[in-house]
Length: 258
Image (cartoon, rainbow, N blue to C red; front, top):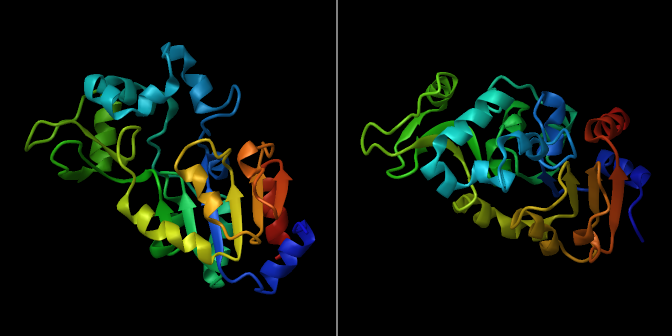
């Protein structure tokens, strides 16, 4: 029997769910002023068509960055993706609510903005699967640099290079072709301890993040909150609740009832 919305709210409120795993994507940060990646017309990948790329993911490909760092610089500058002064949304506040009530097992996030941490979620609970923008580093010798200094170079259209080895500097965001953080693989097995999994703001298209849902125990309910809920990946999941619509609207409504 599938979980209902009323049951979801009641069980969270009554703390019947004690080990909740969050899997979050770009959709939870749209209300903070960031574009998601795959929405038609408004998504970042659609907006990148003006750069005449064969594949918009090239912007975040480490091999392309090595050959042409100016592409990443241009995109960062044009789309304001280096704005470090963002504020948490209702979705981030919801995650904090769960953590404050000791109901959050882990928050796996594809997002690099760190707004879960800004909202007050404990750092030990947040796994930024695709890295973060708190620091920058050399792609060769790994020397750490200030990310603000990096983005100052972006604004000036000056390619920043390592003072030690002359390698290229970029934020500590995982590009295609780079390994995911070791912390992700250390924490991933804990998803089997979940008594509820909430997927928010992601269409589950990027692997291996999208494969996490198959590590859920068979009868554990999965809740998907997203603009698109017709996802093939969810077909094998028996107990699921699909909440289609704007992530912030749905979460705000849930929070009012909590």
